[in-house]
Image 1 (cartoon, rainbow, N blue to C red):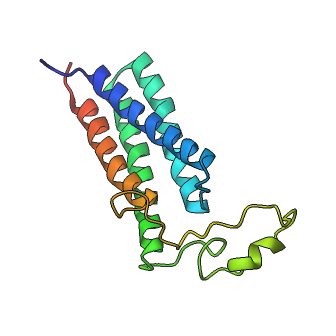
Image 2 (cartoon, rainbow, N blue to C red; image 1 turned 180 degrees about the horizontal axis):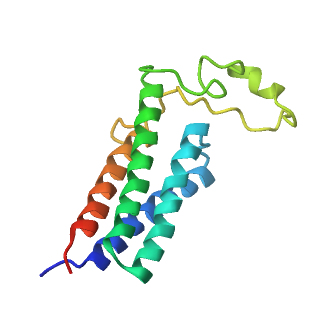
Length: 156
């Protein structure tokens, strides 16, 4: 049985849909995202839109765009992983190098005692099997790059 380009595109766009839905679900369940977590969502949203367009229009070019979106998500997840591991600094607004560490988040405009705490990008919060959400996003996004690339290379 041969897997078609359309099937691969559906799987890849579906993977981004699942990752994005999971991010929103975990946020709803109380896992507040940091700034880098939020940035990682955008390429997945783009990949979903590209997937819809690719299923309508077809062609390898759209699949390569999907691969680029997934690669961007993976690159952002790798950057976030590096920030968590202190390999490089993160954004000053959400890492230990920033001006608003710890209780400083309460100084933000509109913040009150009931406001959620600022989630730091450089704090390791194991999620599953000893990996953080950024680590999982990296691994899964690389898999999506593979699916998108396979779709682009599929001859039909």
